Amino acid sequence: MKTSLRHFVAAVAGLSLCASVASAADAKPLRVLLITGGCCHDYAKQKDILKKGLEARANVVVDQVHSDDKGTKPPLPIYGNPDYAKGYDVVLHDECSASIGDPAVIAGVLKPHQDGIPGVNLHCAMHSYRFGDFGKPVPAGAPNGVWYAYLGLHSTGHGPQEPIAINFLADASPITKGLENWTTGKEELYNNIQVLTGKPLAKGKQTVKGKDGATKDVETVVVWTNEYGSKNTRVFSTTLGHNNATVEDARYLDLVTRGLLWACGKLDDNGQPAAGYGAKK
Image (tube, rainbow, N blue to C red):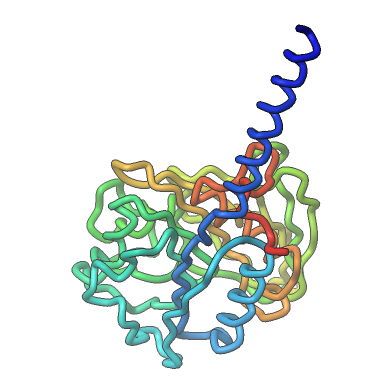
């Protein structure tokens, strides 16, 4: 009788394992909408670096919306179309649209995130969709603060291109669990006008030289998460990613991949992809 019971338990465990393996194998890839274009960056190369890097690290398919326009008002086809993210699991904003300030256009960009589609934001996305006196702290609920409310942090500018020492905050999130501190090559350290509802995950420190030749250390939040709007939409952001050398760095791509999986609810408490959402084999 005991032998039969052991066989039964083993059989149930085996069926459970098979079901789990089958479930992981059947996991549908996350659909990622990557938006690039605008001023000041090599988006023509970075869009492909990101697509290749993310697809190599996770079970995702990256579709691109790109403009070759290098101005601060890139004519991205998402503008005027609040349904631009329909069918996608997450939107990755990597555009530099610093002079797109029409409140109606900005509302359309935010609509999918208000509806619950997660967002990932890289570098110059933090300096996009702004108008009015955005150089000062924007009061909560101000019309020109809606993009900052989505991000969870308000930034307006950056210092020189110098190495940034990245310090991950201990146990801040599964996203950064086990990641080692590192120092970039030449990069832009974005300022923090206000840390709003964002949860800091890493700080960056940069040594800069003044006109008088004196040096000083400047430190700001460079990686964070936020929960946005009435649906508590998950949002991951990092201000890192100006130069190609940073974007193609395996450590950067690992960080962005983890942030994306977290935003989609596909990252476990130990910082590992959920079953079926790790690197394809």
